Image 1 (tube, rainbow, N blue to C red):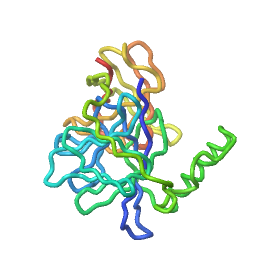
Image 2: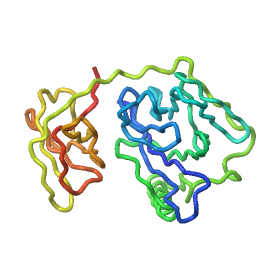
Image 3: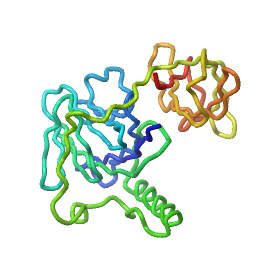
Image 4: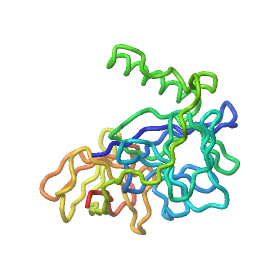
Length: 260
């Protein structure tokens, strides 16, 4: 099973007190997820995917940028190198790459693989620094050394020597195609400050404990902060826990993406 990748997108040019970091997850290819609109604004599971640029994980575990049809090309910068992202041909992104989308500039910070999936979250500079410090401490305990920087790298520390070429995948590794599986929400309740959900499915054959899904409204739109995680499966019934939401919603179903 392909892993997701946790990243932060830093909006350059923002004021010091702005929430200039967007902490988010790029999900494995073959399912909707993280995207940028034509203005460079971060979107999550956009309803019109064809008008948005995609950020996803390839079959070999690389962070990819997939350009959509737009008035102007998105440019990927890697120190002295630049590459216009061709439509329909994904570009491999590395830590500290810069995306120029219209007038917006986004610095990419790659934190590593994760099984988690959650909606983009805006953070201040101080909040993201606390996140980096916590990640550094966790890495030091696990690896016995400092494996992450104590904060986002700067241009001066981004690397020594010539930058790696910017790779455009003419034939990217295939990702197992996914299909949509919708389950019916039968109950929502709050316990211990967490939103808990019960749902039933026509089949749970391709679902597993720990898998993530998204709460959906009656109209078919996603519920804000509606990412949920399966905590138990019994028969065709699911127990789920919301990862970001602590109040009941108007969700009528929960959507999963499973292999075909």
